[in-house]
Image (cartoon, one colour):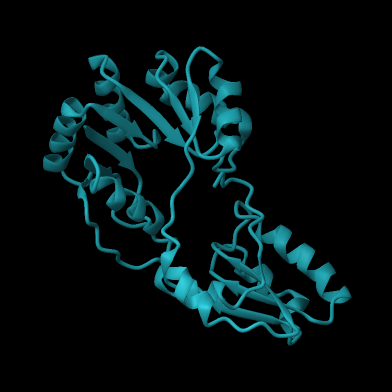
Length: 263
């Protein structure tokens, strides 16, 4: 089966999924961008067929891939080249679907976001192709917006956890309890919620410690917080994807208060 999948950038957890799929089916991945300046993952080898929509030549090749595949999976709609591919596939009447986080995940105005999706996702709205929501939250959001005249599936992300096993085998458990936030320090990821909850918890639990790995727009808020003045708080800054197993092994509790992610 020939599958063509479009996504934004080569994120490590998606690369793991695509590499595994490529062992089982004929997979070609179309990346909109090579990097996101706000991400600090570092380069990861791609063991699957892919291209980037950054030249006229690759855009033409992407059109060929979209035309020839048995199934095309789109995950975006904001970029014009991606909408051109979606419109081409929709016009061909061949199988395709849309796979994404819940609508409105970017945190913009709900009303403006809904109007934008109505305009930019005309191909999806005028079809009955399936929508894959990332998590139950995603499924419910798209069903509420696009109606019940199509099929919805919960298709979450994938991560290969085998590399975490070795790190956790070396883990030692002491009297203190460490809570970890790993991700972008931003409102979308709920970092403000984390700081507020942690401020309350640290006042009540003498054996609680906090560990933060990441950077982002709320870093200034963190630096001005009274939490940094205590010995209970450790900020690691941005870390690579390869360092995550060792960092997670230091934590007793992982806190993920994201306002957008459907995992």
